Length: 82
Image (tube, rainbow, N blue to C red; front, side, top):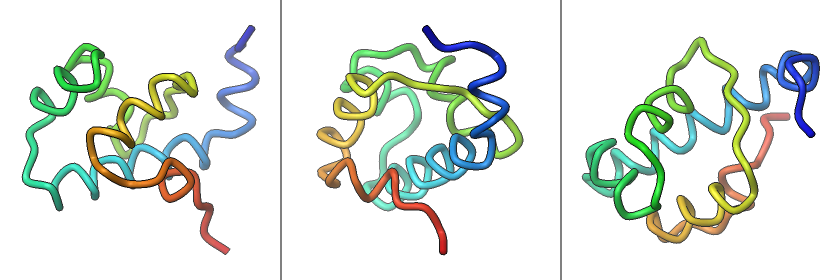
């Protein structure tokens, strides 16, 4: 079970994932609504995930669904900056 403490502990990682999702979404020419619909998530949730100052956790199922729609290996969405 994910707690607020878990999200705040990994805040920068969650923000980085959201930024990478946004980058690849725009690269593919998709709106948030299009990506959300194809990935089976709500546009509001995707908006929160992509928001640069918000740390929103997401499940692996959601991550895999997004990566599949974006045609990007999931590990690329998880890559942390060195």
